[in-house]
Amino acid sequence: MNNQKKIVTDRPITNTPRLGCIDIWNAFLVKGATFCHPSDIPICPCTMRKLPVQLISYDDAKALYNKEMKKGNHSFHVDAWIHFYIDDHKFDGKQSSIWLYPDKALEIIKHFNGIITPDFSTYIDFPDPIKRYNTYRMRAFGYWMYLNQIPVINNVRWGTEETWNYCFDGIPQNSVIAIGTVASKLKSSVDRTIFETGLKEAVRVISPSQIIIYGSTASPLLAELSQQGIPILSFPSKTNEVFARRKRNV
Image 1 (cartoon, rainbow, N blue to C red):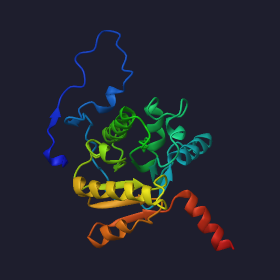
Image 2 (cartoon, one colour):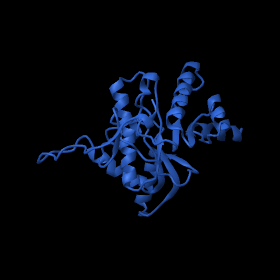
Image 3 (cartoon, helix red, strand yellow):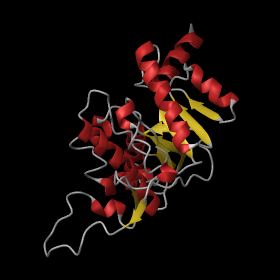
Image 4 (cartoon, helix red, strand yellow):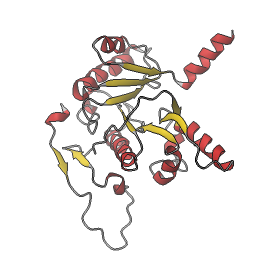
């Protein structure tokens, strides 16, 4: 299904809240957003002005932020984009959740060039409602970053074919997208097939102007897409960088 064919609606998130009503669903994150129909996934604009030259994980960015705050360096800035291609507990745990404590996350993120929207997990063996909810959260958090003038690139994540009717929703066509391959297990023929068939569908639906890859680029399809005119910008994962340093030191 192509996003251009979806009915998109502007509508208030809620009616006037009851006195004393507490927003436990983070509806404020998508205030003023436009939504895809029928999934109700909010549209998250890609507001990147300049391609990333460096990526840093959210947990590393958080550690750097804490270090600079201890030094009293409250105006520090790092020429890097934050990514969330890490274990969920590092950015969505009880104490570390960017969803539960978005204001704390914003305080960290604003010291960097921008973010690739969070990679809330949508593993194949997850129940479908969780996969839908995590897709919603990717776009909602990204949209709130956009409201706070943080440059945003959309992360794209899919599962098997039944996820395709919502997993690409909310991503503007002809925009730059990012994909993490760290958990894609491209060495496995089964997992590589799921990755490549989903990537083909992502390209068909979104028609990206460029694809950023974090992790392995060991998929022949990426080379094919590059030959077809879609630029591929790749960044090695932290693990790959460690192995590369070890090889250089041998």
